[in-house]
Length: 211
Length: 239
Image (cartoon, rainbow over all chains, first blue to last red; front, side, top):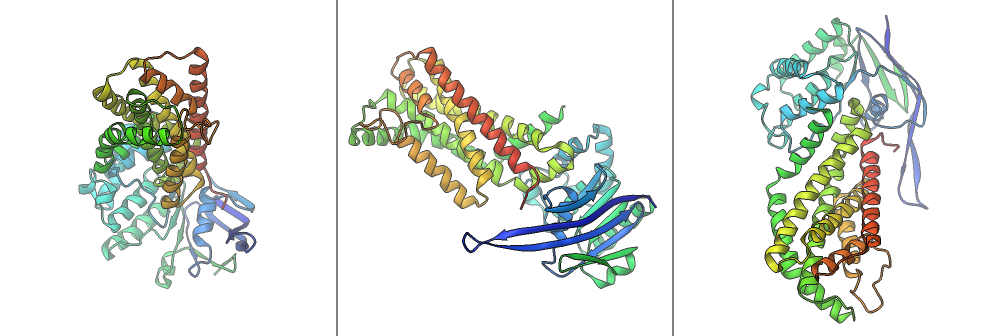
């Protein structure tokens, strides 16, 4: 299968405290993983193990200290905490990200309508983010990552705040996209989800292991 | 509509949808021109400065109103949208285009703020050189776009950052030209040349080409700093 993401020996550390008490914590000490087209891969690990740090490095939001990352330009990223503008509406978020993804207006409208329908939050289209519930914000957060049908989808606990029905729909959507050839890497916490994943990486002590 | 217009327009709307911001756009210029002006004149008098009362203090207070509002707005443009801007940049727009859209939004807001301050000044005193005054008030606003954005890019905490913007503003305002007998604490504060221009315009005097050039240079430098700050906030973090 064609690889859509390959991370090799990724290292990252953070400085904490004020000089002369400043110390450095190495979060990633050589993490490796790869995702192929048409694969749904999990990334698990304890709280603070560095899963979100690794995700931000893979997306390009955070610079790495060492190692290599090969990924396509056309990727979608759903951060753990929604990164949205409080005063803008759902429709305006779609418009902004459509510009970033280089989509024309027709394609944008089709994609937005499809996702509003699929995730069942169409009635909030003209609501500002500040007026949305946590679960609806998370639906928008996820929809923005999906709207351009990327080759690679990186999801960092994307279902936080979803009700049970939406949670199940999320997995249906992910499996459907995986079957259509999208490579998906998802940060997951629950052992019950392992059956839905093609492969799982565990992140511990700054290193990944396929389990 | 181009990507630039879509993104810049959204960034402007983001601020204009805050009712308190809209109210402050009117209240702060009125407060500065009617009340802060007399306080500034009394301070100058106490410090041995030569800042004349009436027209000069009202004129420069309109400039300070525009500076204060634009500094605060630019700071919050960076600090409250850092995560979303970085996500948009990483999604394909790029940090430079996000920064340009932020600059465009900040300049548009600066024009609105300056217009409100100018109208307040005109209603209060009348203005001897209206075009000179309008240009100088806008210069105050744009210089503080640079100050606010720079603080926003360097200080992540909203409380600490907003306090720092206020501190820079206070030092700059009270060390301006004609404020003290020694010529002020700061010989080269960011708005010093714009302040000279505004005092002159307020008192019906003209300014030389060199003085206009110095203000243009300060505004250009401030917008360059603002671009760098917005770019820094939208690009990948190193830690």
